[in-house]
Length: 328
Image (tube, rainbow, N blue to C red; front, side, top):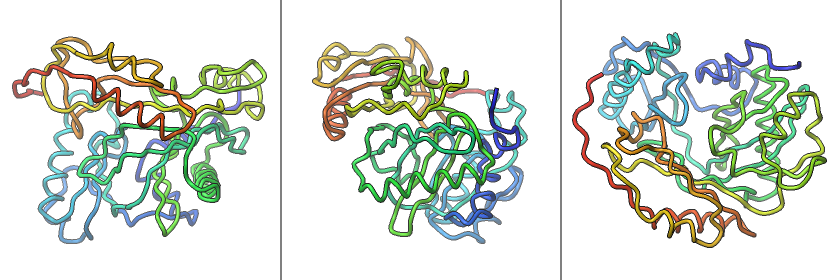
């Protein structure tokens, strides 16, 4: 079966290698550098421009990503990231990338996510998601994805073109991609092109129409494509849709959830899935690596989807007991 070269997959999962490929291909990238985990952050802080963003090379879901606005903030961010990268659940992966930290200039602007399928080098865009909540730091917790995008058509076309260029720069060739980018007056800045589809339950926010029928699960298209069927006959469903990844508000142990039935009755809401379990230890970003759950909605317009997601979220009450210090 066709697929991506292993080297391309490695580039797509390492933020420093990805930045280098984007830069070498002539795409827009912020300034960036990297330091070893055992380097002195105070010494490095005097050589940087601010604001900047400190990132792990390999973790996902914005885990460990922090903005620093000055030298003191940078030192604090690196020390905090170092603690995350030394945790047992990270070290057990034995990833050499966990010994290095990426530092790059903060890119202002609106953020988007593109879900697409590469077909022997040609990008077939499936959905462009707006992220209506500002992601300016100090942490970068994603909450709402809504599609279709309400941005101008020419802007959307530029996003697709730049992400296609980025995929080629990485060497990605065949299969699903999930890409993230920011757009400001300077242009499109591609943050990542992952050689995978949208993660976890979020795929339930995306349904497609195609030869096999209307409003099919996105996973059906992915499986058919993996088996050799073309993706060109498939399109995202006509109605707007979206998902909220319910953020963890504070550290502690989950004791219960109130208001789920009321939230589920909000007009436009399809489903609410609470994935955190009773007595589960919760940690918000930047240390955390999960969400409380997901809210899914459909409507005739993207703005109505976002409104339904926010309305349902306000009706949920999470009972969280304060946690004791965590010993790793």
